[in-house]
Image 1: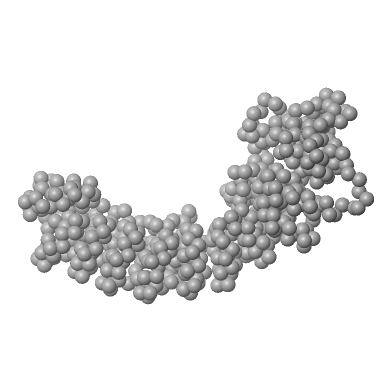
Image 2 (image 1 turned 120 degrees about the vertical axis):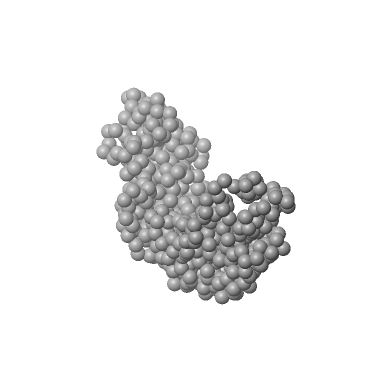
Length: 498
């Protein structure tokens, strides 16, 4: 952030020993060193502007008053001052409240910035100095005063920090709760260097200050988020409690909206989600508050919108481990056998991800849907038929996942040969090996290679079935599948969850 224009700083040239010592103390930013130099007799030999700067930092009000009474400007800039810092800014940063009061009373400009972009009127909120903020307001400094380039107000900073005390003081003093930020520099920055055009409420939401966001809404803030309109929706979906989502909705801002994303250079998972109505579902699925996902689905979110993932609401809920929502969706008639584009089912993902409550809910529902005269299948038959629920029933009885049949086939081998991706992955997660060979010398990889569905081979390659020498996923996972296939899909790679 560039400082507001002001008279140029003269070159200190060759400073006197006293001046050099004081400048060194100022650069050290050590108040004890500044105080020591100031008290020396040599301090009287310092240029007036440098003496005022030092006095401001150590709170020497009487000395500063004499300099100002002699006609020195309260904004006098000392030759060689560190960061071209004004006396007001130096006093504020040092926490010298009485000095701040004096300088403001003598006409110091609270907007002048140093070389680092610091401005006097924002120091109180940045340093959590509420009494100093009252001093600025009592001196007539507007609570809506904004930095000249970034358009940042104290209310915006306080909202981003979640500082309730400052927000109450500023709003009670007449601050405009809906005043819009410009570029936000140097406190906020947009990756495309665009103006934010959003108020304090946007700062609170973007900084995940949920209680503050709720407070500002209660004070009448309007959810006008400018270029952050969709970004804040996704942030709320992923992190905020459902109470705030509902409160935003009541104020006219729904996180479920129609929007088409430009996906050039987007991360792999986002490349598969070009529409907001589906993307918001996957972001809500990982929210710590499990009530957010059903809220999103109930207000128009659709994980199938605009993509070919085939991940139904039930599959998303199961992958996210949201057992309550799984129960609700099943009660509403959700298809428990639906497969996504990778061949996974709600049950197989729940097994693989270790979601015991979800697995129990799905198994209980599947057990209720079986015909009363249905005969239980053996472990091998269940694996070949893709009947994962029955596979789990057999394993619960203590049957080994690596049990072989008369042909020395394991359940995983038969599932691979039949193209049952979900069963293959679930069995592997439960301890099945991809190494055994049957009586004909065939491995699971060999059997999978004989059938047309390549999705099984993708998973087997991940498990090292194609080459025992591949010891880790970096070697086992195909680069194309990472960027465009299975592992670019939500919940299919731990580090690539939404």
